[in-house]
Image (tube, rainbow, N blue to C red; front, side):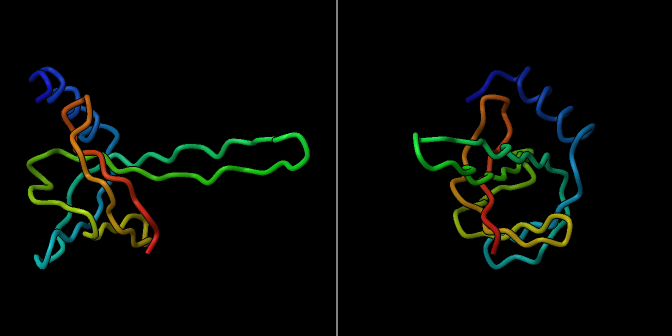
Length: 103
């Protein structure tokens, strides 16, 4: 478990920089929570003959109390785009990190 100071940092991150998102955990009704949405930028590559871009990954970070019971396959909607939650786990900042896959 992360040190309690990281929980305070995480709370500040979601409060100040978070966005309102809709999350559906299991069969429960959707609810609105604050979550920080982060997209890893695409990276260019050149393997000596072919060049391209790696795909962008999207993550959501939320307060543990807001996502109790979240699991692989639950739904999150942000900016009118629906995502499937993958690999939810506690982050080093005391938040729950959820990889998002467009549904």
